[in-house]
Image (cartoon, rainbow, N blue to C red; front, side, top):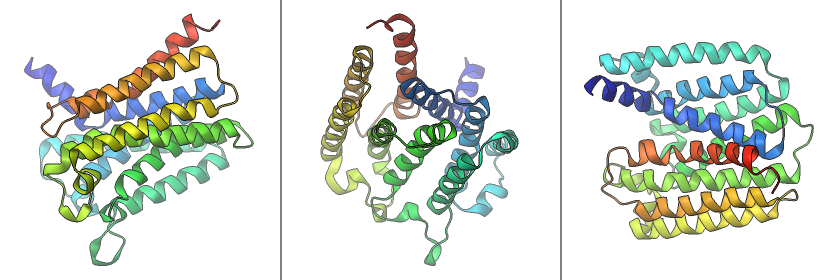
Length: 277
């Protein structure tokens, strides 16, 4: 059991779980928009997410990511560099449009993590900006990039999907914001620091309602799609309801981050068994 736990903890700490969540959301986009996303883009987003997330988590300051003393973090570092090489190889197979989109997302991520502003500050330290940047990058990586890799124009349905994905990520961030309330610096002025735990949960409920309501803005809506979004809506509401300050160890890091995988699974079942609805 100890070995299994170590493997599981490495799976979470090395950002493999969150990368699978992002990977699954790209496939959700492909299924939703009925487009064929290239394997190279899937692989780039998966392996790139691992290296990018680990850089943000363990190397907010560049020198801390290069000079690592802890053996466990060294293993994650080597794993991250390996993933970065795989992601870099996939770049040779991506279109110019996707490359430009990736450059923009990478620049935003760099501004979020690196101390590029005066007094060694980054955009992450700006009041209330943290979750907006994260949600925007996720929406860009899982909706906009797959769309522009195949489609010539950003259609209405793509815009709605991007808006929903932005709201979806904001909703998923609520438990993390509440969990980290005890550790975050007061200068960050995170959502629960501003409005309290109850206030943050109420805002989370509001975002969830907006996320579900946006479903009906699409022009190609069908019954099966509504069923999937309704189930997901209920799961998100339950997640917020169950969120509290003192969380179980894996509540946010595993169960919350598994919701994108659950969404993907719902879509796969939908496409396989309810396609006639």
